[in-house]
Structures are given as structure tokens and as C-alpha cells.
Amino acid sequence: MPSTYAHYRFGQQVYRRLPEKIRSEIQPYKSLFDIGLHGPDILFYYYPLFSNKVNRIGYSMHDKSGYFVFSKFGKTAMGSENPAAHFAYIYGFLCHFALDRECHGYISAKIRQSGIRHAEIEVEFDRYLLVHDKKNPLTQILTKHIKPGLSNARIISDFFPNVNALQIQKAMHSMIFYNHLLIAPHRPKRKFIYTLLKATGNDKEMHGLVMNLTPNLNCSDSNKKLCRLYINALDKAVTMINEYKDNLFADLPWRNWYSYSFGSQYQGSEV
Image (cartoon, rainbow, N blue to C red; front, top):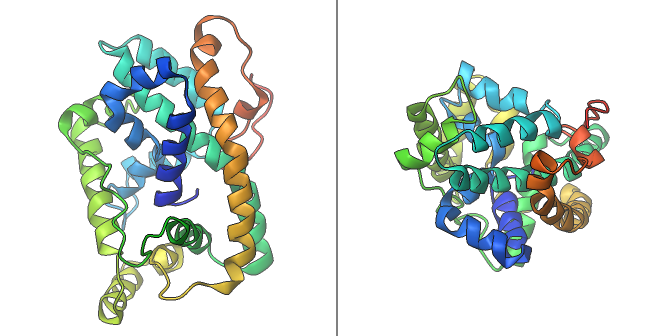
């Protein structure tokens, strides 16, 4: 997946492009929309250094088709006591899916061609966007929009039957904690982080999550390509949100985009 800043930035741009009616539906629950922008990734942060049933759900969801996920999510929202709050979260989740689906195929190809790790390609793209937005990529806090209150956690837990609200809240707090931990503009802290990752067997997967002190020039081409894919995904995300309730309730056919997983893998003609 593109990384934390890319997903947040993308979602804010999509939000501004939505019709006023949908924006007004989201606005009372904007914090849920903003959390939804990170899709199943928030579950990665539940005790992230060790595999467990909660973070495994986050990883496995990336292999599900959009149709599988969002048809179920719609039923959950309509069966809830507060459908508007649930739909706000889903709309953020749709943004996550749109950007992941657009970018992941290219990222996989870039990994095969270059040998650069998945996380590093994505974090380098975050750097590219942060610099473009005149923010310091080494010190920028990326999780200010995550509001880990129990009321939000209860709404989110409805979408994950085997995860309770306290576990969702823990995952959100952990996302904030680890994003702060990985802000490492100075070498001593970086050494500590790399030692910790190696000691827990996570060096291969997570080493690239720490922003490099200087840009990796081998990611210059991927930054430009991901920027083009990001732009392509904006209108698709707006369309998905505009059409979503009609997909659910008015027999509007689901677009072929939903036949793909978050990882850009075609899952068959379910739609």
C-alpha cells in the first residue's frame, strides 16, 4: 500500500471533490472517514512486532476483492444503529482501496526490477509528497488525524466480527505510537530502531518504514510513476463513493475495479 501520508493526503483531495450532499453526510463523522483512509492497515499495528489474530486479519484482507469487502461492509452499515457513521468510515476505506488497487501492481513490478523493499518504495513516495507540500519528511507527524476514542473504535469494530472495540482502540493508539517512534532524524535513535527490529525478526519487513536521511535516488522513477497513478485514482475514488449506495440498494452494477484485491490482483468476475 502507499504509506501513511499518501493515503491521508489522497483522502483529503477526494473529500474536497465529493458532492456537497456526501460531504455533509461525512462531516459529523470526519474522524471516522480519516481513519478509514488507512483501510485494514490499522490492524497491522495491533502488537505489530509479533503475528497475532488481529494483525493477520489486516494482512489477509488485502487479498480479498473489493466486492467481497464492500458488499459486506454495506450490509453491516445498514444493519447498524448509526448507518451514517458507518458509511463515513466506509467512504474512507473506499479511498484506501482505490489508491491501493491503482498502485500495488506497479509497486510489485518495481520490487522485482530493483530489489528495493516494498516499505521503502512507499515511504520514499511519502517523502516525495511531503517535500512537494513543503513539509519536513524527517520530522513530520503523520497521525494527528487519528482519533482513537472508544466511540470510533466501536463503530470500526462492527466491520471486523472477530475484533472487539478495545482491540481496535489499541491498534489506533499503537499506530500513533509507532509512527512517532519511527520519526528518527538523528542517527542514535535510528540505530536503536534498527536494533529493535533485528532483535524481533522484523528487520527485513520493517526496515524501510524509517524515512531515509537522504532520498533514495533509485526510487526517483517510482515516485514519478506513483504520482501519476495517484492522480488517476482520484476520480475513481470519487466515482466509487458516488455510486456506492446505488451499488448496494439500486442494482447499479459494480464496476470491474471491485474484481481486484487491495493488492491489485484480479480475483475473478464476482461483480
